[in-house]
Length: 429
Length: 157
Ligand SMILES: Cc1cc2nc3c(=O)[nH]c(=O)nc-3n(C[C@H](O)[C@H](O)[C@H](O)COP(=O)(O)O)c2cc1C
Ligand code: SF4
Ligand code: FES
Image (tube, rainbow over all chains, first blue to last red; front, side, top):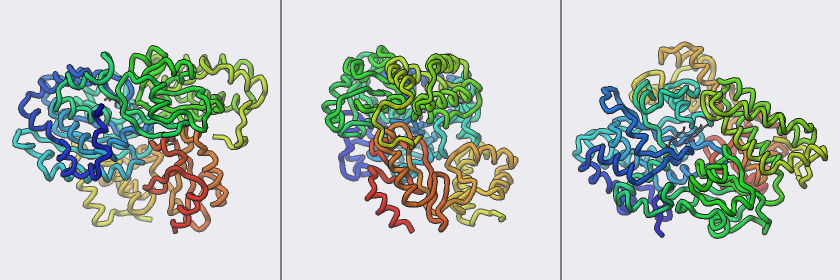
């Protein structure tokens, strides 16, 4: 079946606006300008599109939270911070078909009545920044951006705002702090950004992939979109696949695809003829699945949730049977220790402790009581004890690794060393 | 050393001001401009930005130090940043780090004595599918092996 987001990814020069337009880019604009913003929002609501940034929140619904009678400017933000280990799909959108993303932003801005939109792009994506600058220039030249777009009376400017290396800036309120020129500190919600976001004004933050789905929905209608995927997770999903597989890369799959099919048919199976040990399906912030669980789980929000993990941002990575899960968790914990913004004590201290304890276990100096300790520290980090859910994003994988691969942790402690044949002993993270 | 934007960069700075409803928001782009101009962000340049943006030097300093990509001291011309995060670790990033340390004869966090290279390890760069990988200044180098690393280092003078 022809997919939604990647259908033109193999077209030569698809980044150029003339080529993209031959393949339908910006066609939806004529259509939306004949509709009211409310009608556009309604169509997106009907499509059942859910946010692709990690939480899966209903997109059309989120847009309706912007106060109707506001006299203040409304802002749209395209969240292109993409920094979660395992996730590299938004980058593919930019590299392969940036105009589809820009068109999506125009649709969203029109629906929420925003005249200024920002793309918050992670600092490391410099090449991608340049691609977008070029695409924005082209779009403006054709009259798709700027004043009175296609004679509709609708004005929109899009600017890029470059981050500078901080994972936390992907969290929407931290993003706003960073946009405003400060440290990337998350803010307490409520108020939600839709009510009081950038500069205290109503602001909608959407993920890049979410926005890129909009041209298809407006061109073809909600019903066509719902033909893809499952009832509660309609559409497709970009999955960035890495780890111990034969064909890493970014794949657009229909929601609901069994992990087994994805692994065997798309990814060419586990590398080196090895057996599967486990999978993290949605990025480092979520629990892993054992091989057995993975083979019974599908790639959609509900199926992943039922398996006590999440489809998250689609950062799918695979571990073969030789992987030391303690070592993998050590790398995961190191990431969160490094990226905590430090505002809340349970998070700042907790991420450090977790990292320290896991490192201790991995190096063979773990103690019997360390597993209970890890459990306690994680429970203290979770469930609303902190300003944002970053702390949960470490606690969840830790608890998941302990629950599913606890025997490996116990083995390390009992043996006083790592039982896996690690050729790089002594080279720690 | 006193800092001032070049005429061209001052113009770029004024352009960015127009993008935001408040001046302060131009701080991140302005810090990027400083780094583009002199390779790092000095104390003097922060004081300069504070004046331009009507901020206190302390505020500029707080923002600049929060973000890992602003260099607060001069570093080697070619900043090698090897991803040593979760997914790259599954595909041998530690070997890449070890190879680079050996070849450059420096530790992570150091610059070579000729000022040519600086070596860091960083967290996920959004390139996990082409691991192991590194970023040198603005460019990504992916699917690394020792032979490739040799060729890359050779080219960077
Ligand atoms: C620690 C943390 C990091 C996040 N990073 C990103 C990110 O890089 N990109 C993104 O789109 N959303 C990220 N999110 C989710 C955003 O806060 C926000 O929910 C999302 O951008 C909303 O877009 P959506 O509704 O289209 O998914 C992150 C959330 C947290 C808690
Ligand atoms: S939970 Fe962690 S990352 Fe989030 S605001 Fe608190 S300290 Fe910062
Ligand atoms: S973990 Fe290295 S690029 Fe993602």
